[in-house]
Length: 474
Image (cartoon, rainbow, N blue to C red):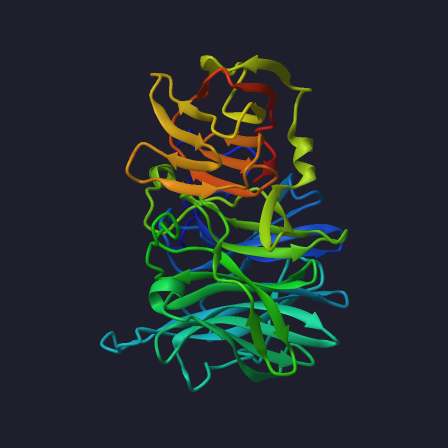
C-alpha cells in the first residue's frame, strides 16, 4: 500500500504569512535562490509524519519573498546516492538550468558500526524550476577527506572568478567543527582545497559546524554557520545549538578564511537555526532560517505538522556587526494604513486592535538612558506568555518558563524602535533596525493582549497594522 501524506487535523497554530509545509515536518531552509523571475526556497521535509523522518526537499516559490506558492516535492530519497535522506544543501543557476547540490544520507546496515551513518554530495537539475532530475553519475563527492569524520554535509555552492566553490560543514578527526572547501570548473568534478576554518574548542565553537554559508557584505567576507555543542556562556549561546557568523577574509588561493572576529550569535531568540542566504537581483543579501530549535516543544505536531521558516531578513553590516532588518516587501502584507496613537507611559498601557496576524511598530523616546520598560504578550486570561524587559540598553526575553531567558544588548540610545510581527503562533521582534532580533514560537489560541509598562520618562508612538493571513498557497 502506498504511503499517504499526513493530514492536518487542527489549524489552531497554523501561520498566516510564514512559509510552512502543507502538512508534515520541516526544518532547515535549503537552496535559497532566484531563478527565472521567482525566488525559490526548498526545505528539509518529511511529508508522512509531523515527526522528523527520511528527509525530502519541499519546495516553494514567490515573486516577492512574501506571497509563496508551494510546489511538488523536489527531491525524494531512496536512490543509491541518497538512500536514507536528501539532507540540506544549496541551489545555483548556471545558464538556463537550476542546479541543486545536496547531501545524501545513508545508515550502515550493521547497527554496531560506531559511525552509524555516512554521507556524500549529490547533484540534481531542472530547466523549469519545478521538476528535478538527479544526475545519473551521482555522487559528485563520494566521501569526506581522510582527516574528517563521517559528519560531512550541507553544501553551499557559489561562483567566483569563473570557478565554482563548494563549502561543506564537517567535523575533523579531532572531533571539532570546521568548514572545508572544494573547487570545480563544471559543478560535477570537484577538487579538495582543504579546511578554511576550524573550531578553537568544542566549548566555545562546537563539535560540528552545520549549514555553512559564505558571502561578502560591505567588503567583508562572512562565514555563517550553525555549530553544535557550544557551551552556554553567561548570557550567550543558550539554545541547544546556535547560528552565527565570523567576519574575515577568504583567501581563495590558499583556501583559508582569515577571521577577524569571534563567533557572533545572529538571533537571540529561542527558535532560530540553520539560516541560509541569497543575493537578490537588486544586490541585497537576504537571509531566512528555520523558526524552531531541536528539542524545543512543538505542540503543533499533534495537529499533523511541525515547523516553519522565518520572515526573510535583509543583512546589513554596521560597525563590524550584522543587523537583520525586515525586508521592505513586508509592507505588502498590510491590509490597512494602521491605527496610530501617541502616549506617555505612566504605568500599564494597552495596545488596541492587535490580532493574531499583526505588525506593531513602536517608537519610544527615553528622557534619559536609565529608563526601563516591559512589553507583555498575554493570553485571554491576562497571563503573560512572553515578556520583553528593557533596562537601559539591555533586553531580557522570557516565556512561560521564567528561568529560560534570552539576553541581548544594543548600543546606548535615547530612542528605541521595535517592530513586532505576530502570526498565530510566532513572534519576531526587530529592535533598532535589526541590531537585535528575537525569534519565538508560542502556543496560545486567539488574539494576544499586548501591553507596555514603564514610567513617565518614556514617550511613545505606536502603529498597529492588520496583516494578511493567507499569504501562502498550499
